[in-house]
Length: 100
Figure 1 (cartoon, rainbow, N blue to C red):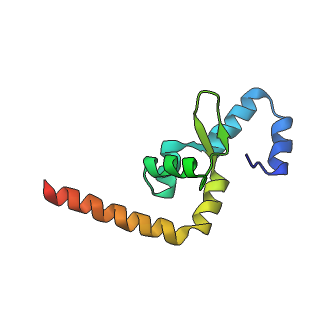
Figure 2 (spheres, rainbow, N blue to C red; figure 1 turned 60 degrees about the vertical axis):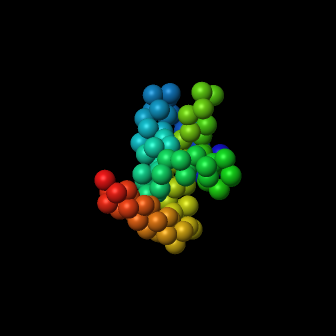
């Protein structure tokens, strides 16, 4: 898990409630993170399994959390690939709707 030093310093002096509030405002769970990236939830889970985009936090019960700044960095680094994935996904969606 990567958390910038300045964030860790802030977290250390926060109360538990303040930490929860900070994490609530700055992290996304799998569904929200996949929507943020414009990909399917299954792709994000597969990328985690392949090590392409690992969650910043994984709780004991298996819940995965991504920091928004990590997703922004990933989006910037992989913008062409993400754009291509959205085009393919939109074509598949269009085909499904014409089959009905």
